[in-house]
Image (tube, rainbow over the protein chains, first blue to last red):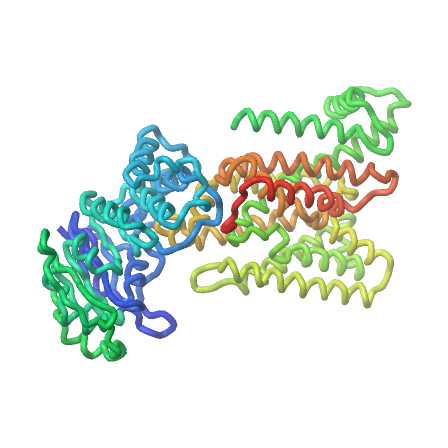
Length: 275
Length: 340
């Protein structure tokens, strides 16, 4: 069943089309990875989903309802987001920040119920930040802060989780833990990732954006090809199956970046496009 | 938390009683209480008490109560504005309100406009000047995504310079002694002009501001996580910022109109309270009005007793007392606001 649907989404910023006719569906419990080179429109597409941006054309649908027709609070109960925003302004404690995930479920300054406090505790334990509960968020390291913000998103009890570069600042241990947690959470997940090997392991499907256009979409084994890496990313790399899992893994050396990245727009048109 | 509130409320009540009694003619607290009781219940007094009673009830009580209201108001408005523009340096006057008020007051006193309003003419001029600046800042800071925090601050600072120049121009062309003292009063602030008549308006404005801001405590916390995150948490940042702007502009305008631009309190109190009570707005907005009121009552007491019978400008005291306290506290604790 389709949970989240990006229906021919188009976004222009200052007259330049940043995302063009993006059509992408995320099924119930599916993890979809959005990959692509810098400036390909990944973050812009996500911003439309968590409503920081209003698409110029097309629409986002959640469980058959059009997002722009829903009150912000209602959509916030269904969709939680991890944005790329940096540090907070105020030195709130980790516990307080995580509890703010309940904001769309509470009226005014209504206190958290016992169940909600337990929910916060569990989310912090899951992201391994429980020991930081009383610490101020401004004093945390980048990786710790990232985990706190994911815990906050989990506390929102969403059906859809949107994450923009969630592995930023995370060490290898926490990258793997976060992505395996995403796989096991039973949520519909739309996530942007730069690490293609991690994306191939963690995602049911990969959607490749290049210059705002979806150039490939499907299971990692179908999408992640040497041709696509050359055309969309400008990288001459080898794709080999993972010896244990069979998931495609990208291997490259420092001579792999081709000098023709600027001509990818025409080349990508020939890449596979499916759903 | 309730203990702290009770403690601060008790401290405030004690401070008010003391401050009403103390002054050029000191009245002991017991006597002060007797006079206040007589005033409220309509009891009788002896002939020799009348002068003291007049001082207590007609002069000092409205003055101290105004200090309470403005101290509380400036503190919470400071908290709200720092959250609204996401800047630790913001205070109630960062958006140019005080310069607008000064210019409005000077214009009225120089030209004799608004005479229909009698003794409130200058205050009305100050309020209108404050509103004019707020409206200009609002219009200039609007973008497609609502009020932009950085643009708000920059426009506000620019407007402040503009209206200061305008004020200087008026003083230059209408050089009477009145204008100069008006300028000094409005730029340093003070409660010397306090009357019972102005109290109800300020009381309503302050109470409404405190209550409304407290009710949006959680939204203000969310806003501190960033605008995009706020939207993803269901907080309409455009509407919230608009509401904060209107509320804080009206409140600041009303306070400046009765007491001038008392600096420092609205900048420092929010930080001091956060240092002490943590950053969550529900707590900050509970403690800040009480702490601000206590501080203001004592600052005003010092201002009018230190070199009595002369009176020091209140802004001098708030800065002289507040700056060292603030600097020491900032250095002593690991206080963070959006950076190190």
